[in-house]
Amino acid sequence: MIVPLLKGLKITLTHLFKKPITLQYPDEKPVVSPNFRGLHALKVSHDRAKCVACYLCPTVCPAKCITVEAGEDQNHDKFAAKYEIDMLRCIFCGYCVEACPVDALTMTGEFELANYKREDFVFVKERLLEKR
Amino acid sequence: MGYEILGLPMAYYIAMVAKVVVVFVFVLLTVAYATYAERKIIGHMQVRLGPMRTGWHGLLQPIADGVKLFFKEEIIPANANKFAFLVAPLISLVPAFIAFAVIPFGDTIEIAGNKIPLQIAAYYDTAAGKVVDVNVGVLYILALASLGVYGIVLAGWASNSKYSLLGGLRASAQMISYELAAGLSIISVFMLSQSLSLHQIVADQAGFGWYAFKQPLAFVLFFICSVAEINRTPFDLPEAESELVSGFCTEYSSMKYAMFFMAEYANMVTVCAVTTTLFLGGWHGPLPSVLNFIVKVYFLMFCLMWIRATYPRYRYDQLMRLGWKVFLPLALLNIVVTGVVVAL
Image (cartoon, rainbow over all chains, first blue to last red; front, side):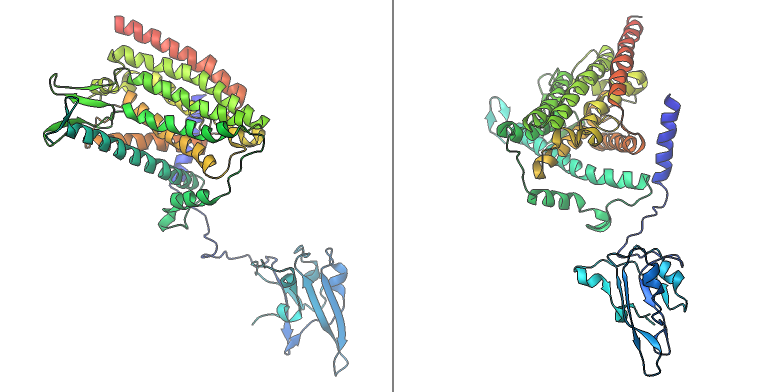
């Protein structure tokens, strides 16, 4: 009965001298894995969003957080006139990225999404455009 | 210096007051920084860092905690017994500090021709040429140790909440069960030293004649029982959050809440100091006398934190069984064996 108790003490004592694995968050930021599902980004090609407004992402979205409205440009090509993701509803499942036929949507490693106002959680097209 | 009051030189009174102030401030600082040390040690034992952000490596954390607690809102429940509710934290805090009056924390020092023993309730009898202290010092400590529980029971009752009351009752039941075993386990020390005076007990242990070596069972029993008596993990049942919300201090807030925890840490210091005095040779050792004492006390406090980081909380029936069916018979057996050995 006493030996296991002493073993326990030994374990905690050896842990005392291990290097702590704590990350001091605001000073040290974690390196997220490449397949981390953070904030969405709309990819850009030829100075505009690759999105063709096919509506597959809002269709597949289980949280119904994506709003897309299609528009037509001078070349009669469809483009996303409005593209909004409500981050308060988003569950970061990544279905929208999987569903995208033109590979226009990705998820970034951005995870610091806290904000002060509800409106600030609605990411409109300009805020979603891929940062270069 | 020429003044005399009641036949004692003025320097005597100055030394007495100085001793009280120095010891009190030292214990208070130890209590404050024990909270910090505990968070750091347990943190590192769990491969975390512990407090890091207030001051260098979080060194100002206890001060920041104190400031925060003073500014928090005081809540007194509408149906609480207001007087008892307010006085309860004090009742649990005061005995923890005044137990230090009889603990010898160092050798006799000489200041301006006066020999001053480093023990608050003691003086150097020049005529007899020896240190005179409270000759029932151990009884005084045991009496005070059992007083602390009044604060907890009173807090539980005054809160007018059944969870608090249960926490308070648990505390008292636990205190009684373990006080018995602790009291009995140190009887073997008195049998060897033939004295209840703490100064005498320490003097007997000079030169590594520690009672911890002569009475290892009593030492272990006393230390574990003391841990149970001061309601520390793994015996912190009065605060068992999972079943009693927060036990006796559920209804307490701000500084009154903090006072219970100050009492807990002050008790921790007291218990370690008493154990050092009774079993680990007090201030005897290779370093200057006071330092020996401090090192031993801090080592025991480290052990308490280490134990806390290791063991889960006992269940109530296990706690009672351990106290009454294991520790009490062992303590009695130890007395019998010591008695036989002393008689032979």
